[in-house]
Length: 462
Ligand code: ATP
Ligand code: MG
Ligand code: MG
Ligand code: MG
Image (cartoon, rainbow, N blue to C red):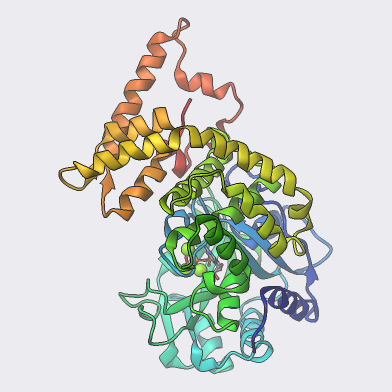
């Protein structure tokens, strides 16, 4: 049966409400009081302390549709956007949770019933995986549910041991995939070519059993719990009979609006998909109080905005355009997220200002980059060019790397690092106090993010 994304969201929440779950609203993309986490990257984030037994709620079962961003930190899909049919920087995660209430048995049955009975997906289209040491889950699937052993695999900890971050709640998991059919390249989970888009993971059931400390030791949680997450866009693609998330209802308005701004007809261009993806993460990050800046969360936002603008440039757009996609986004999602609708003007203002600022240097920077590529010997963009673009033209390193990848090139990260270090030394020498450059940054009170992956990417700037 064909279902719209909003029908699916309601169907999911209703199904779990009828089964004793308390429906909770999505929390902010900026995790409250959790400096270990960059953005809310899963439905369980708002319940982290409940899993840890530090906080008590008046319910033991909950379900949500949670807005998530995966653009930095442990779960980072920024580099997948535009390249796979299934990854976004922003997506909605449907989830049901048990806080010491039901465990594996019920979690597996609930998920299977929702997919095969409520949504009517044929069992032959599904594929199930378990953690290879979890014979209990395997038994439930094969003996109780009656899953087909030919469409079943045991997977190691890379994919089937889920953790929110390096520290915190975690546990073995069991994942459900949908087979989009032979016409799509890609092998089943666990096979060498599993990274294609044929078998798409739709739902992850995490059996929350441990709390990992900063030394990497696992401690048993007070009560075994359940955390599940299903990507709304992925299940919508299944129910709408399309093989890419970008073809679902939620993206149509955005793609069309972006294509119109670019004056093109072909909605399948990867740059259009990148732009349609990025407007969602950027708008919702601003709604949740993040502003473009040169550090921390704000710098992640700035990088996503600038990537989107560069993709607009790639499509031939030469005007300030990105903020104009807020209106079609509000049209698509304003009902489900009134906070987006209420903040529309502010979001537009912030995006417009950021784009105007970047527009001053984008074209010059692009000319330098294009000239460099035209006369490049070898396949690596030199570190001094990457640095010049970064330092003078406001090109985040990942933006230059994104351009390089389109041209089957790479960038010289080490060379860039050397240039950065030299600049830091110059800044230190020039300071009349002889102050350490990093100390100066600390005065901003933004130090809680040091050590994240995007800082290791050398994205910290003056
Ligand atoms: P994948 O292996 O496809 O990258 P994942 O294992 O990293 O997904 P989980 O952390 O298990 O994803 O998240 C739970 C569910 O959220 C996934 O099963 C999927 O449906 C959805 N999901 C995860 N990442 C994304 C994303 N970047 N864009 C859209 N949906 C996503
Ligand atoms: Mg992933
Ligand atoms: Mg996975
Ligand atoms: Mg998963």
